[in-house]
Amino acid sequence: MESLALGFLLALPLVTSVLGEPRRRPNQGGDTCYSVTYDSIQPGVGVEILPKTLRRSPGVDRGRLVTDDTIPFWTRGYTWSSWRAWGDSLEFLLSEGQVELTIHVRVRGDTLRGRLSYRTDVGDEHWARVTAVRRSCLK
Image (cartoon, rainbow, N blue to C red):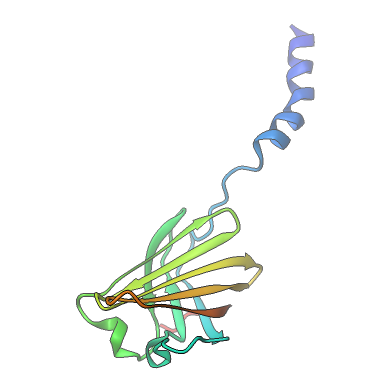
């Protein structure tokens, strides 16, 4: 019996290295807020509606997303937004019927870097690079 227990203890590091680390819980405390900047913006992107701040609600791997700035475009009643996480990446989705923004970023500490996809209801699609830096949330 002792050899079985010893064998289990010796095999445990091998099992964890094969299976990977336990799933991380990316946002289980309070809201997480980011200041967002864009560059290399392609012509056709409506820069006037790009959110400058994002607020991610708590969740294990998905949740609600709101823009924390004063751009009224994303505060209309028929907008839809969310976030989801997998591995070291996050995806932010914002849609209001005519325009859809999808932001894919890699998490590097308090900084997120990635790409924005800007789609319109007439089928146009444009791109920009995105950097978001974690900051304290406004009340």
